[in-house]
Length: 253
Image (cartoon, rainbow, N blue to C red; front, side):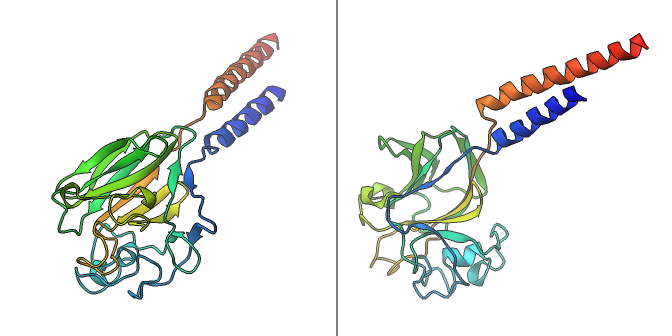
């Protein structure tokens, strides 16, 4: 019986190790965090809840909860999800993701409601060095899924208007509209996010932005930590030893 208890302890430790991976959003903006919201009404609060030139009720919030112009969109998650920002609806101008356990990322592009979709480029960048890695380029009919393994600190970027505008989750890096956040992030669950991007700058096509120009889902894939592999080996060895001793005991009888 003692051997079986040891195996149970190892398995419990293993489960703890598998769920210990910690990928999250990092920001140095005071007050930034996950914020609740009600149904979108295009009143500019939160910052992404704006009128769209694509049609009535056609911003990223309408996509997330499958209302208005997105009520019949099959890819819309139809959920009320918290968004990353500041209390009162303002955006967090600078944030990035941390990936300390080195997990792979799966990202799916569902829709591009953008006049520049044929030339837009979307990818991730190393938040420590600024190096950029393209994932999606030009016109694509979603869903299209890509996988990548980023650096420990990383963000997302979108290049629009045939290279004229570069937007980053750390908006201080923007080549156009610096300091204005062009990304919206909604949390479905731990490590699962929906992304909406505005590919234009203010006072051009849309006064503030509908953040529906690039719509997709990002998932940080959980992986066992190195200690988990060790625990699997220990658990297997203990299990084999327990079975062997039981067989010996049966033969002795």
